[in-house]
Length: 130
Image (cartoon, rainbow, N blue to C red; front, top):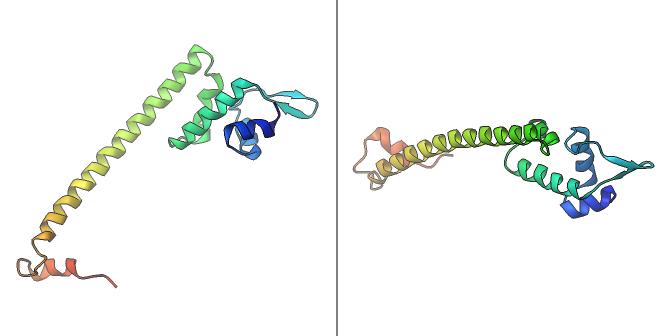
């Protein structure tokens, strides 16, 4: 299939496919004359690339996909996934701490809503900013 067909099947643009090829993520793309020729394995690979991007991976980090059909390549992809999951776990911990701090602040300020239970220093937190 040609680049336009692959683009239609995968929901991306020919420009994106050329970029994936430039990064080496599609392996060696066969040619028929001056036209690129893609196979079913390229459809799967483009789906993986797009899914990885949606999960926060940058193209430069996806080099292990080049050899995913080998045991070493598959192991490298698994290591990449584990690393991303650890990063997400750290981000989640930070977000949970921020959420807990916001909940505590909300509770503290809830006691100040009538402005009688707050000090002058706390009341400024209730005033809208301009």
